Image 1 (cartoon, rainbow, N blue to C red):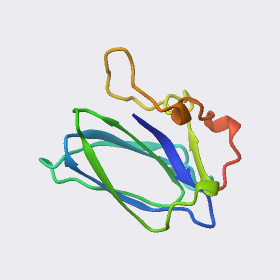
Image 2 (image 1 turned 120 degrees about the vertical axis):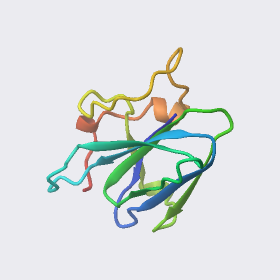
Image 3 (image 1 turned 90 degrees about the horizontal axis):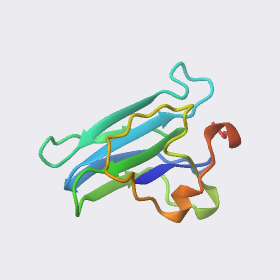
Length: 126
C-alpha cells in the first residue's frame, strides 16, 4: 500500500494515474477546506483491462493498494516532486473512513507511510 500523499503549495501536484500491469484500488481524498466535498474520497479500481485512469487535482491526497503482485502504476504530474513539500495522512485515519479492500494480515506499508499523522494533526495547506 502507498499511503495518502500530497504535495504542498506552491508546487501542489495534480496527478493522472493509470495501471499498466496488475490492479490497484486507487483513492483520492479532497483536502480543500472550502470545497463542498471536503474530506470526502473516491476509490476506484484501475487496471489495464478496464482502461480506467484517475485524475487527482491539486489539493487532494492520493494513495493506493495493489490488488495483484507485480503491479505497475504510472503517474503524470503537473509539478515536479519537491521533497521539502511532500506530506501525507494516515491511510487508516478514522476521520476519512476509507473502506480499503481486505488483505490477509493487513497492508504492507513503508516506514514513511506507517509514521504519517492523522488529518487532525496536520496543518492543512489547502
